[in-house]
Amino acid sequence: MADELDIKTLSFEKALALLEEIVAKLESGRVDLEESIKIYERGEALRKHCETKLAEAEARIEKITLGANGKPTGTAPLDVE
Image 1 (cartoon, rainbow, N blue to C red):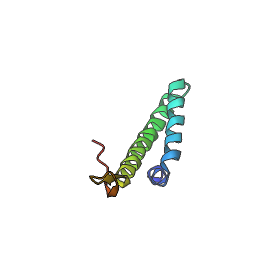
Image 2 (image 1 turned 90 degrees about the vertical axis):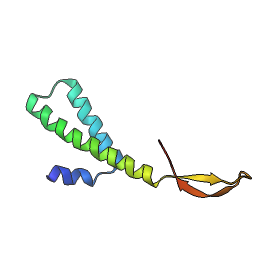
Image 3 (image 1 turned 120 degrees about the vertical axis):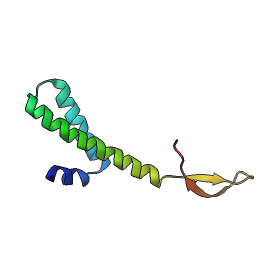
């Protein structure tokens, strides 16, 4: 539970850096099975945190709307789909 709370306080960049470290450890093959499972679980929590942070950022991004004359008229939510 402490790990979960710790992860929730991380910035996107820090969480991504930690996730990259975990991937490198797992890919190296130098971690025993129990440690692999433990860090994989932490990596999964970090991945979810990063996805949440990205979704929050997307929700805040707006696009500039243009009028018929080509001049900015305001903003609207960005539709990324």
